[in-house]
Image (cartoon, rainbow, N blue to C red; front, side, top):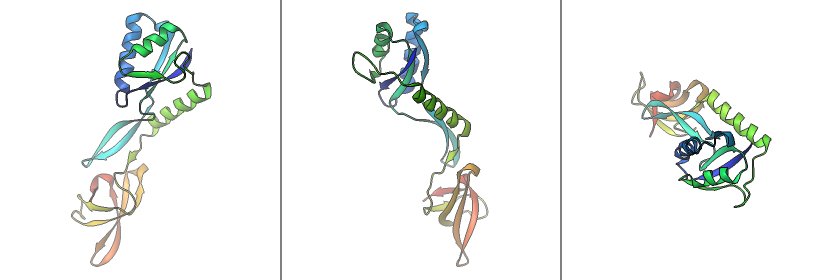
Length: 174
């Protein structure tokens, strides 16, 4: 069995994966199919002052299917609602190489392991402190420490620029 890339409508990858898995079991073609992979990684973001775990698609609009190269299997995949086509020619889709598959699986695994938060701001951006003893102060982001979920902000206290170390949840972009 080889891995093939299936193009879907963007945003419907998860639904197409579910429909394809149901169609495989309904048709009784489990022996012709292996994994159906939705390449995504876990990301933690700050939304409305709360940490939210999300799934970010590595390849939006695509899923990867392990299957035998038979006409019956190809027809089943192309018949699933939301599938536009398989990558390759109309008659002969092109399978992924073993290196490409291993690289993609490693990338997915790394994304699961590290689920680092993404800062909702950038270096040099103006932010407002919303919690803690400096609540109400505004300042400029000096450094972002994503692995520690911390940010260094330079605020002006008594006319002097003062760096303070805050949690992601303690500040919001202006």
